[in-house]
Image (cartoon, rainbow, N blue to C red):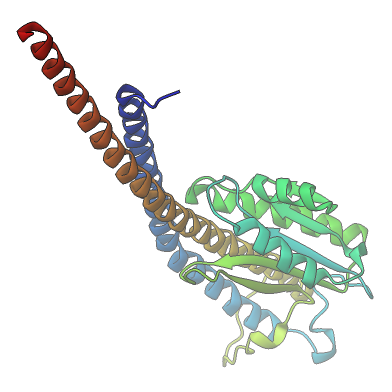
Length: 286
């Protein structure tokens, strides 16, 4: 069937509409990434405040009692993977899950937590089993609630089955085309990060030092998870921006091809009309 100018014109209108959608998606992704980054300073300031409290709490404990805030057991490793919630983000979830599989090692007994519906789809395609899952945030304001869900699931798991190590994996924004996946070690909890507070007059506390320390550790883990969720959300939207830029380039190339084809077909129609008019005039003259 010969290609008609009306068909090509209709395709051009469709491609123009698709280009508008892609541009809008890129703009939304850019705005979400900027908003997520804007929340990071507040989260880190909160973590620093909790860290200072841990330094004070440690000073109340004997040296041999420091480092028992989170239960741990031999051999098993639990991995928490923060993946994408929505599509059009390239291989974002694939990269995170590849890093999660490598971090978990050959022994999968420790378990795998997956955050993000797209990550669940990729895990199903690869035949990966997971122990717990949750949806990734769709807006930065939801990060604290999701971090609380992850922390609750983690602590419940540690109470049932202590593991030797818990790793939190998330993408980092600003990495360019080669996406960087960072790892946070949550268990065993590293108390060496927190210098002991040195004060002439120790602070007044109303809880037993070990109880206070355990609660501060839980709060600090929550802050670390919140930061990871926010970084992952920003990185996901950066990946979506890159995917939309590539899609826009492909759309522009398709549009240029269609416009060139429409001009060719229009020229052919004009030529055919001229030929028909010339032929009719010759027949009439004859």
